[in-house]
Amino acid sequence: MTNPNDEPPQDKSTFAKRVDRQAKRRIKAHRNMGKGVWFGLGMMGLVGWSIVVPTLLGAALGQWIDSQSMDNHSWTLALLIAGLTLGCWNAWRWVSKEDTAMRKDAADDDDD
Image 1 (cartoon, rainbow, N blue to C red):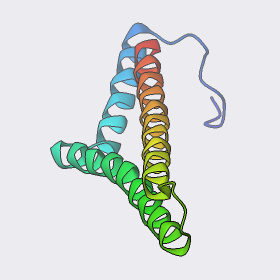
Image 2: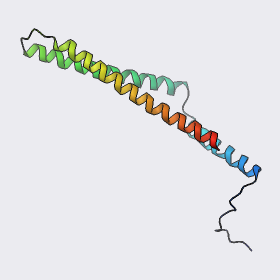
Image 3: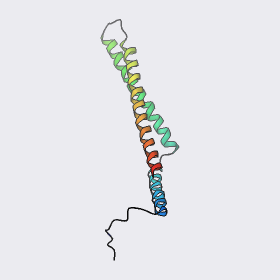
Image 4: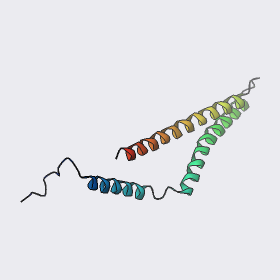
């Protein structure tokens, strides 16, 4: 008589491996079910806003500094460019991190 708490044998049959792989794929597909066209459009919007917000904040801060000082330099233009650079860097970093996670998931699927 076997104890139900015993661990299964280490080497699985090929049928068991296929069933295990299919079960993992089904669970992953169920988790990612909502990631369709609307999810992709939402992510594009999120990337866009991550660039626009720092750019507009930089321009607004620069305009406020320009209104407070009578300097010959345009802080509006300088901070607009700084905000744009920061926003692009932030979006690139976020997209790179998502790409790495997607590649890792794909590699994990291939290993199974």
